Image 1 (cartoon, one colour):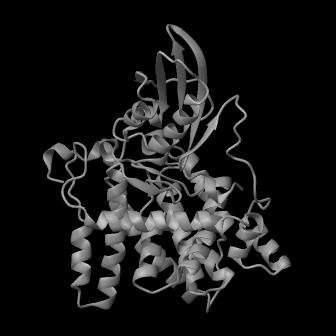
Image 2 (tube, helix red, strand yellow; image 1 turned 45 degrees about the horizontal axis):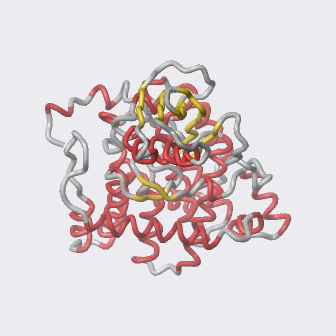
Image 3 (spheres, rainbow, N blue to C red; image 1 turned 135 degrees about the vertical axis):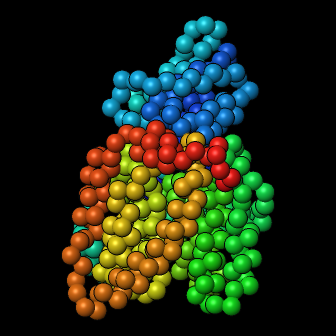
Length: 404
């Protein structure tokens, strides 16, 4: 498994695979050329099909500025990965450098035929069973497992936590419409107001979680800075849980950093053994993964055993199996924003179910098994339901005929 720095990243929305990944690739590409006359960037797969709605062309042109850049949306390419881009730098009319880049999901990239090794292995364990065995053998807690292999990661995780909190705070202040043709109204501030005036403790809690999740997701949809957790399409789930734990439940910051570390174990395992990319596995790979990470973090914060933590993460993923990625008009808005809020509530329910059921029986399905199942399910999903906007809600719902 890779470093948590390759899982949690801070960057501009609305999509880690469509904005952050191309931005990272373009920034690195610029470092390898000089005196460039113009750039040409070809987009393929999901980057081509939903790049307009995800503002892929905008972030590429902005990153490569002030040099003129032509972004070309293409379909057929000759590589064995479903989503990527080709960067070309020209001096006068001569192409002086070409890169082929895969967008792996979560803002991660692979640049073919270069020395960059972003996917460098840090953790030798390849399954949760192996992680748990290592922890038991060495008498380590789950956070200690992370710090054993990445002893200097805590300051980075604190920066990630602060960025998450900032995205919630900023999102709660905003009003008006989200950018784009859908003209979707921001509702995070309204939800928070409703939560603050609720006379029911349980309803107030759920409204707060929804408000925090909407705040981050609406910031993401507005191209603001958010955290991949594990992706930007699912960026509202873990931050809303941690913000609620800190500001409403009074958890100390160091405990939340440990919670981020625990969530990172589960996110890393999903990324290693399946996928966190909607273009590869559908939304089960994004929102499902984030819900699983959030459930693991909450179970840890609540002081539950490793077994309850595993079961909570498994339940959260299991009940997102088959979830499609079919954004309307290619925007990370419908169903993405609402889906984030639903998932953080489900994370709480997954912990409740895990803790309760563990008193009566062992969980039949293990976390490693549900990750394998998610990977299998993602392979079986048709391409129209994997971040292409060629099917599902994206084609059934006619937004021109209704007010959104």
